[in-house]
Picture 1 (spheres, one colour):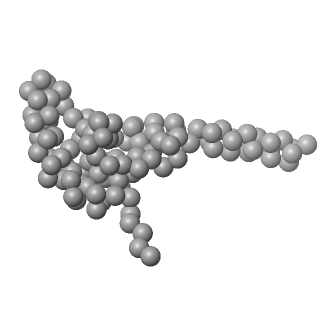
Picture 2: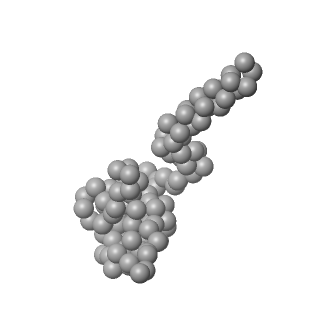
Length: 110
């Protein structure tokens, strides 16, 4: 039984040589197969990306050239974006941990 490592959006974008927004747009358009984990996180099989890489880069190269001529740059995924995504997807767990820590402290103090 072989399990294939699923790539996240950033890894898929790096593999394809395009921006993350372009990858998301292609998934929304149905041009790129993707899997949702937990209803939110997009994941990609590398074997499927290999099969469609040539067609994707050909179609995207025209889009990237168009964006550059219009003056818009492809945004990269930075540390602040990663932190914002982490807090967005884990806010429930963070708040729960804080509430439990406060409850434990109140039990110890009293």
